[in-house]
Length: 569
Image 1 (cartoon, rainbow, N blue to C red):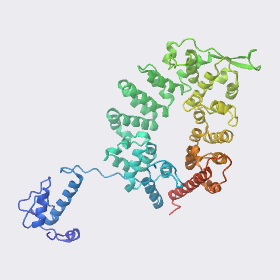
Image 2 (cartoon, rainbow, N blue to C red; image 1 turned 90 degrees about the vertical axis):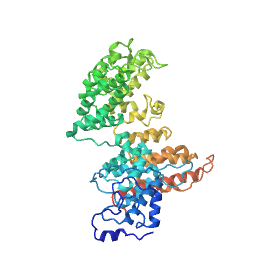
Image 3 (cartoon, one colour; image 1 turned 135 degrees about the horizontal axis):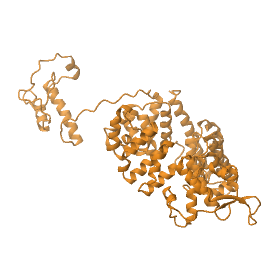
């Protein structure tokens, strides 16, 4: 092999006059020389054989040969055909946000390296890092940090595999994450804003760019654009949608209407009123639901007029168990064209009567504030407590539940939920997820603090069997009363001798949602207790293991937050 100049010596050597390094070499050649030619030149020396390789000004023939051999080796290993170099991408944009503290940066690397869920089975006492990653990302975003550039690929891979991570992961990745996503098709989801991810919107001066993206972009890009514009200015977003509404497909119109619901304003009413005449039944139904969520809309007034005419307050008859007042219902006898235009579906599901079906749709679209005035000035709690003549109570109360959730009406939700400590009422009326009487949905209409107190009292009376979904809508970290109620219920379950696996969902929530400050107080629960008579074999040891994992996870969460604030090195 001929002697070559090193990079350092080449940088200090005087630049020779520009001249072709090889008598017969063409420096404009873009295709590399065949590998056998490179090997032959290396064995014989460039003085005896001159391969056709490009040579930069000031570069020796031997160095040019080695550069060509290195490029060819990489191509051979990558199994790629030689091709001219593509256009160099523009530099990544600047991200002015502060970098992560060193300890937090190391923690993110560990979380991303261990993000794949385990194979199941017994978990042991180690914290589940895959469940801590979403919380870490949210905490980092709240503090305004940017992701380390070296971890951007792993962060985008994590967001690609878990849609629940995308909003927080893409926010942390910032503009450089979007820049990188344009270079890899696996990360294109970041550009489409799927799952709440960010979309880089042009400024107000780039209306033509916005219009082009709206008219030519992928459907997911258009939904993300509409959502972003509605958050910035609801009127601008509505004008964008109205410009192409008549030419959109029915399924696309439906998705676009759903996007309006997040930032619904009274200014949307004329557009939604027009959508009531849409050729798609699903679009008409969705437009009617959105209008009914605007208590001052004309549709809400029309529905109120119909439903109030069906319900009246009367003196209790002799068939009632106690004297007083009773609600008497006379549901509609026909579903006319006006009702159908306002979103009332005429055909009921299997097993439902027509009149009950029509009544429920009218009541749920009626502004709830109209009922106290119509029913003698009674409060929502008093109205809910009134007996209902006939077999209409379930239909009426279910419709009020749907209306309270749709209108986010805390007073009516409070009345329909009832007292959480009442062992007869709340437990008896607890319904599966998605049903009209789903207490979890009603809870979302309450303020956060009140919601936590209600769930804590419910757990104290009814235990954890029906509380899992309720816990999922409570703010994190849990308030002290709610956390104490959950831990006390878990302790009671351990004393009963059952296995902790029956409560694995609640235990997992506790690991993510309990206040980390509770770790020291829970230390006593990690001891192995005597198993009661009739207990499941080995349950005491399994519960000890579960509580050790809970305490360890809480302490790790405390450490993570300290790292993000720079308090831990």
